[in-house]
Image (tube, rainbow, N blue to C red):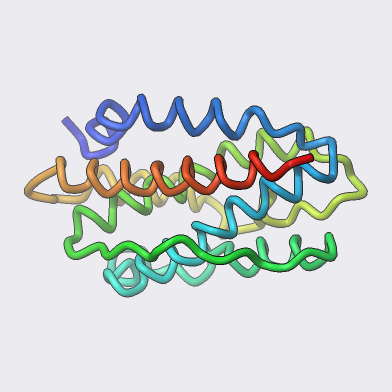
Amino acid sequence: MSLRSALRAQTADCHAAVDTLFGSFNLSRIQDYRAFLRAHARVVPAIEHALENGGIGRLLPDWPERRRAHLLAADIRELDDRLPVLLPQPSFRSEAAVWGAAYVLEGSKLGGALLAKAVPDYLPHSYLSPQGPKGAMRLFMDRLDASTVDDPSLAAAAARDVFELFLKAGQVELEAVP
């Protein structure tokens, strides 16, 4: 079984929970959209930094072009909001853990592209519509499939941890929406 297949199978419940929670934000309302972005801003910068500390650059040479925290921060500033406090940064101590966390962040781009359709044109949406390297998702999936991690459960555990951070951040921000 490929690492991608193992991650998909072992994180399906977490993925569904995150999709359900973030699907409850009405992205056509500025208050909800701001909260949605703030929830992501509690997690994405920390995960990107942790991935860099874990060596993502060795696995994905185009990593700098894949980063989105700066796009997220720009959208939040354009909405005249401040960046929220980050949730604690995890540590990815193995190649498997780095792949698992990257799987969640890279996969969120696909979901973001779908969600961007619900955001009115007059609101900033560079985070949900990143213009990354052409073929970046295919390259990511190819590298993920070619990876030779010894223990896919370490990748799944890291992915589940990242999904849990998104859930926590989403719940905090959703509760604050008027």
